[in-house]
Image (cartoon, rainbow, N blue to C red):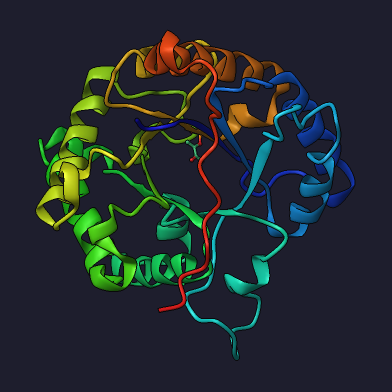
Length: 289
Ligand code: PEP
């Protein structure tokens, strides 16, 4: 069964002085045992967020809490890459990472091939990884949205060398966020049914790439102007497993509403027989081979 995940992308917002308190507030207001929660602050705020999330108001008695994620990672392990951060440098700071966000594709010129190398670096370091894909508005209007996303998934994963990523194990460290570019930060959202159709297409692509189980084990999130009001439309779709939230993730009230709604979906998916088992994914080991 796939986990229900709500990941917060704070983008270039907050400072080390205020990020810990904001994270603690959000963590305390989203104590939903069935939902995997992740906060991805700017690099310079990772330590503050980690520390802010470590308090008893956030960490539940069963040890479950909010994970910390980075918003990007470099594809090399070390070297002359001014201003960059490697996966190894995230040890002790983050257990998740976002790669391939459309703002990095747009502003930093990231290609599918480069994102694939980031995936491999993240996997090697044992990071859970959210791979972002999504079409532009003109591509959707031209009826090419699914073909574009299919090509992105293939481009990122092929570039990363599927054998090295361990595709035969079903890539348990991988989550894919479908984020139509025209919906990010615009207040426009996709239709739940369209996002679900894209999730089905993404899993078909994963199956075509050799993923066992037809890609069924890989969570697919929706991202693009999600709020506490709109999240329900996406979580009503069985093929959507949560959300990557940008602007609304800086607002504790919004996060409380989004995670509460996600909790209803997670509990319904688990069913009564399962009610005692923990929600969070098992820890990942770094891949050494
Ligand atoms: C994002 O940054 O991934 C995102 C979906 O942003 P927003 O929710 O603000 O559209």
